[in-house]
Amino acid sequence: MTTPVHEAIGTPGQPWGDAEKAQWRSRQARRRSYAEDVVGTIEGLRGRFDVEQYGELDYAPDGRYPLFAIRSRDWNDALPCMLVTGGVHGYETSGVRGALQFVDMHAAGYAGRANLLVAPCVSPWAYERIQRWNPDALDPNRSFHDGSRAGESATLMRLVAPLQGRFLMHIDLHETTDSDESEFRPALAARDGKAFEPGEIPDGFYLVDDSDNPQPAFQRAIIDAVAKVTHIAPADAGGEIIGSPVVAPGVIEYALAPLGLCAGITGARYTTTTEVYPDSPRATPEQCNAAQVAAVCAAIDFALAHPADASGERG
Image (cartoon, rainbow, N blue to C red; front, side):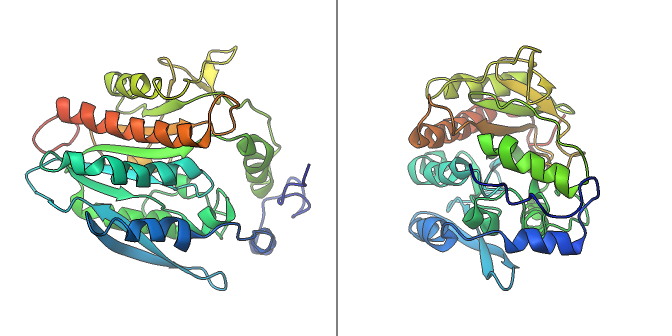
C-alpha cells in the first residue's frame, strides 16, 4: 500500500502553515489531462450548445486552466433555469463525466422547457491530480461563501450571480470514495492539526438534501430513478450515512449554504448533492456515470413537473 502523501508533513497536532501546504502541493503529480478529457469533449458539443469560458485559474507553475460552462442554445428568459455542476472535487470522476454525458445525450430534449447551465468540471487542477483540494490545500466544496479564497468557488459564484432568483433546480454531482477514508479525511485532520477519527464508507448511491429547505419528494424521485441503474446506500448500524441520520432511503441532510457547499449557491427551490460510490464491487464506471445522468434527468423532470412559483425562488 502506498504511503498517503500528507504523511510526514508538519507536526502532528499543529495546523499546517504555508510551508507545509507548499510541501503538500509539491507532492501532487499530474495523472490525467483536463484539456484532453474535458475541454476536448466540450469542444465537441459546440455545434449543439452555447459554450462560454467563465474564468481562468492561474496555478503557475502547473499551468493555466480555462473554466467552461455549457448553456442551452435556445435560452429563453421566460423559462426556469436549471444548474448542473460537476467536478467541484476533481477526483470524483463520474461527476465530470456524468455532467458531460447528460449534455451529450439528454440536454437537447429540454429545449423550449428549461434553460440549462452546466459547469462540468469546476476544479480542473484537482481533476488532473485526482485530488480533493485545490493547490492551496483548500476544499472548494467548503468554500462557496462571500470572500472565498478558493478560485474555483469564487469564479463559479460569479457565473451564477446574474441568474440569482431564477434557478428552479441545482444538482451538484459528487462521489464518496474509499480514498475519502484512506487519504482525504486523514489529510484534512493533519492539515487542521486534529486527530483523525475513522468513519465508514457507504456502499451505494445517496443524496444530500438541504436541512434548511428539505424537499423529500424531490429527493425520492431521484433515488427512484437511480435505483434502476445502481444500488442505493443503506444506513449503517446507527441509522446513519457518513455520520448523518438517514431521513429517507438513501437521503441525508446538511445545511448547504452555511457549510459553504456548492449546492447552496443558488437559493433554488430544489437542490441536492449526489454521492456515487465508484469503489463498489457492484458498480462499474459506466454505471456510475449513468447514475449521475439518471439523477440529473430525474431532478429536472421533477422540478418541471412541480414548479415552485414563476420566479423559481423558494417559498
